[in-house]
Amino acid sequence: MNDTQMLTIALATVPTMLTVLIGILLNNARLSDVNSRLGEFRSHMDARFNDVDRRFRNEGDVAYRTSPRRRSDRCPSEALGTPLTAFTPS
Image (cartoon, rainbow, N blue to C red):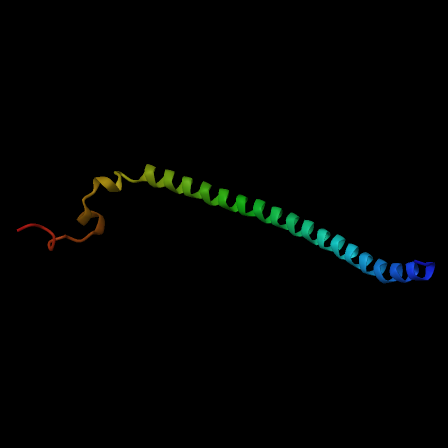
């Protein structure tokens, strides 16, 4: 193989390898950017779910303290506010 053939092979393959290397590096940068955005989104959603959980706990505490008796102590007709005459045995 003489010098001309080596130069021809190098000129044919080096630009292709450089293009692929640049593409890999750019893709890696984009993936790390997406990963950081997903991390931010995950922490944002965790904060929102924790806020909703806190509100449910507070609502449950308020409802339990303010109700004179639990719902399970009521009969079904009293809970519905209508008499259940169709279901009473005759």
